[in-house]
Amino acid sequence: MAVIRFSVSLEKELLSELDQYVRDNNFTNRSQGLRHLIEKHIVEKKWQCNNVVAGAIVMIYDHHKKDILARSNEIQHDYFDVILSSQHFHLSHDTCLEIIAVKGKAKILTELSEKLISIKGIKHGKLIMSKAD
Ligand code: NI
Image 1 (cartoon, rainbow, N blue to C red):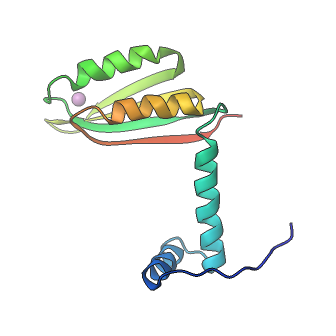
Image 2 (cartoon, rainbow, N blue to C red):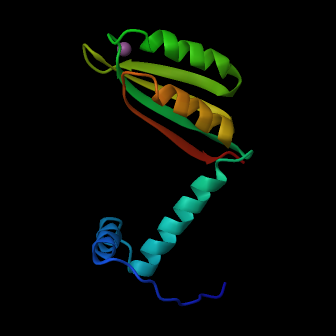
């Protein structure tokens, strides 16, 4: 594929952020860093679509917080057809880690993860998706 050169204007602070990103990820130069950022952003956008993907929703929460488990259960039952399995780990006296394996249309998985992660009291939540075919 042909490579086209173009110039980019960036604020000084943003450029130093880019350079830091390039260093942190061991890219050889800014072009590689930019390419990576563009691809990542566009691929994630494409994932808001009907493509079937597989992934996991990871959540950390305090099980003492009222209603988290009930609400999470309710949501998961609404999406039973895209949930493959889930695992619950008791990390400490208070903290739980839950990993939900999912497969389905990207936009449905995104919708499910947003509902789960936005439950009041969830400390941390993330959806990871990958091409399933
Ligand atoms: Ni637990």
